[in-house]
Length: 478
Image (tube, rainbow, N blue to C red; front, top):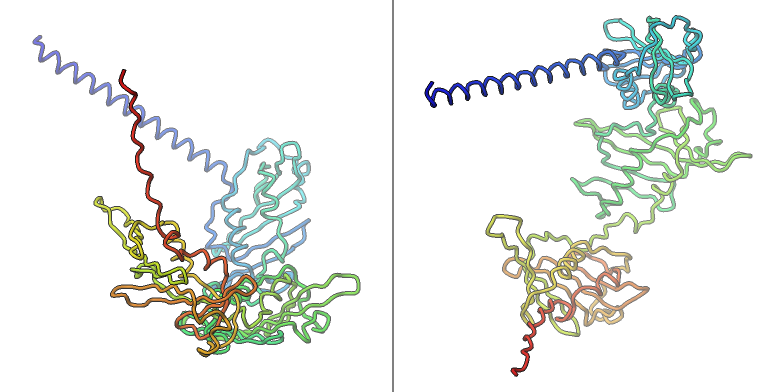
């Protein structure tokens, strides 16, 4: 046999061996996958789509504790009282039930009483939209290994499940009912809030994407927090399903009443939430809330009182500067120490990476600026907020009273030296400085530590040059 033929035969044999090994590995992999799927199927107790569940019942010690039915859009609690259901809580329970796995089964055991399953302590029963029922019955605990004995509805096989699952299914009617006091969907947009009963009543109203308070520009984040507090207000307990008297809950003269105008798509509706406080003869003061069209009185966290009781300053707009950082080309700092000009550019690296922000001092000296110092200063200028209001902008003759006749001034410029923002800073009062900002029609005070840290001198702005290299010392020739 020629050498070439021998080589080809050898290669063919190697290919056949490699193919066989690959095929064997593939077969073994598929076999392992089938075994894993079979194990998964044998451990999983239920096979249903939670979207098709229309009825849920929980029984304890053989007595029906609660029942919920699914309406067109949401779950309803129908026993022991009628109330809106908590869709997320019900969904979580059904998810846990549909995914429940057993650790093992005791197929040989026939004495259900020995495992507390002749009269189960807890039963979860569901009905699907085709009328079929499935369910789980839980018996006694096995404290030895922290497991539970359980069985499926209509099946006599004793099964062992993890002990922590008891808390998953052992729910109260309160756990599964809607606890949102205002009863607003997450998608609902609060467009107007009128708060009365507080020391300083106020009205917040959306103007496009911004808020106004009593018709003037509002502090957007503060207004959002008020709206968020009302939307997210949840009951910690049910004080009364049908309160005969509001006085015992302090709701006859509420601490605060919030009237909301809500938009959901094209629809608009109003809703009122009353908040009161009352103290029993032997109990500490509690906070209660009630929706205007509902008879239910909820116990809530006392924080809602603080969330609604606001001073006028809390809700007024305190944003002094509106600035797009990417539009900034130069920042000028003027003070008795002189004038410092710093330019800003963004250089794109040759490799096309992220642009690098570069600050350069151009007056009164030229040189690289301290990048961290200027970057931090520009950020604090753009986010500068008033810490107190001092009244209207003073007349020119009164500027000296506030140290503003010869102020420190920071001016932010864009393309073509267009003024984007200007802030003038005056004298100190209570660790704050008086300030005036272009476009803001009030005299304010700002944090002294913030503005004093800006680079008011050239030494503050210039980056220290690297030290010159030291000449190497030469040993004297001998």
